Length: 290
Ligand code: GTP
Image 1 (cartoon, protein in one colour):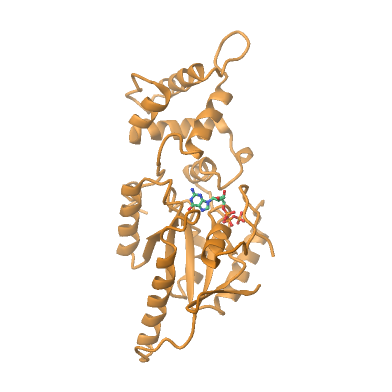
Image 2 (cartoon, protein in one colour; image 1 turned 120 degrees about the vertical axis):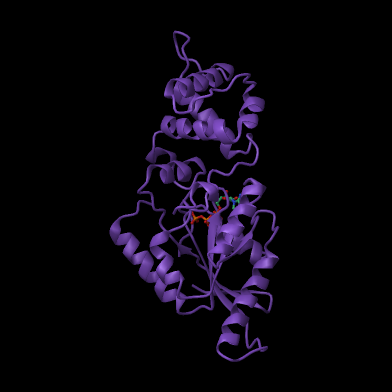
């Protein structure tokens, strides 16, 4: 989807309307990029409801960093849970957390101890974060269309999850917000936005710099590199590494020089298919100031 201001205003209005129908908002984020996969422009309306944050794709994120994010959200009075929608790990905890949120709400209204009905919830998230996969996993059947490309979720009904949870069957689709360059790179590197929007060499260059700093062992092992650049701020050193990787992977063009576009695609494919291991692109310590 191409998001224009008109689309954003419409998506916002639709979510606001549907929030009136539910008890708990479930904000689905990508555990590898919890800030980039969030939409701060919708925060004010989500804040009107009890909310749970899910860090999805926890299976491919760095476990230690995911724990740091859970603390980060807890410090901001938000309950966050790690989830693996594809395997189902962490999924049953969602119903428990939703029930707790609703019990808190009833307690605040002075009606303690009774759970009058199933908790009604709405899942919201940016494209490709795993909304359909999670709904299917919760429902235990193929209830929503899933796809590998952004933008598959289309056309509202309730889906009953056991006797304790009811979901609006169409999740709320949020637009990714990438005013800042790094957000765009993170969204593109994880497949949340299409590759064509940004140049793959730029994305790979940015990611490589980050990997040299944060995951040097993964690079050394995957590409048999002996000496990684020491100064990631020196673009020549980073490009040299990219060339080294390209040469090892046979990404050559006529004349024998390295085709950097192909080398970039190798790096991005390896990242997305977990060949570099479990990688988180954002850590709370980088963003404490935000
Ligand atoms: P739209 O329909 O575009 O809004 O996407 P969506 O948010 O409904 O995402 P969808 O469920 O289609 O999942 C997108 C991709 O992420 C699919 O390839 C899923 O298999 C994958 N995916 C979803 N959840 C997980 C997870 O927990 N772990 C991993 N590794 N992949 C996941």
